[in-house]
Image (cartoon, chains in turn green, red):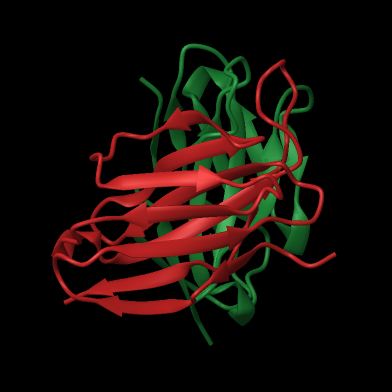
Length: 115
Length: 117
């Protein structure tokens, strides 16, 4: 069965510091991979996605993620965090060959940003 | 284009009651999915509809049901509410059904916050 693991429940970084949020997935092949962000009281906003090709993908708000097949990982990175990045981040997988748009989400990582 | 809208945004019910939540997808989108978000279970898939047909269903009891109308608007209903049904219910729309090796980006609404007392 497909699953997504985000091992860090809560992370605190200082403004201007770099950030890496971890995501590992379990799937028989290469799934579709996504990172979403959720601000308090809001829905989910797509940051970036990976389907195939270049394993380093660029997203919105200065985020990037790298797909590593050998590690079944899709970690999210940002070189310099801004206070407005404080939010909850979700990694998700989708099924390329299934007749569905269904996403399976990780449990999320709550990011706090210190001034 | 207007985004995905969900009504109501907040709802308070008591145990045993039933509730209906509504989702209006982005204009032109024909696929609607529903997710339940709770602190304990995270984001869990409920259902997926395309052109009024349920294409996929998550692992939820029969108290949870849904439907989609010809204008692509969707409703979900929860009967005999339990305390554990308190959650944020998110709706997402996309232009096409999944499958065929193509991806259809999903756009999420702001959610309906359901509190069961």
